[in-house]
Image (tube, rainbow, N blue to C red):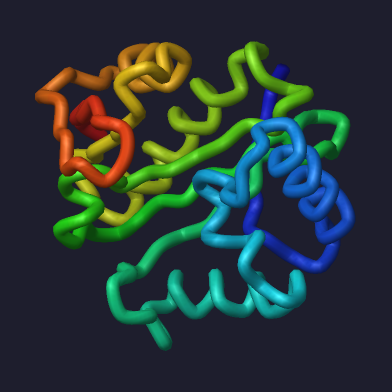
Length: 174
């Protein structure tokens, strides 16, 4: 059950699009966590270009921060997850979003991928010089809480901004 993190590219377009469709349908939502808003773009190429701009700190939209976007791929080459590493925190991210957001493909959940994805992303954070990582999750998201703790997450507090579910906040040293 090994995975690797890769950058979005045109070579994984079809599988990324299938992942997005599966997630939106299964979760009955209009958002894919940790995917950098992939569901909002008119084309896959536009999304890839926007992710590259964010990583290079070019054309960062108001309210956003530089970030590295990764796709988790299993040994069979299947896209099993998205994970985004934000290089810094703005007020929203400090309170609710954290440095890292992620999601696992619905048909691949409960296989340990999230724990592996976060572990690999922490290595990337260390390479960028980020010493302490904030990971947040909804208070009722036991799976994400276990993922944070399994990677050394230390519970700090619960933040309730009143605009959605309250968030548990965990700090992880890289």
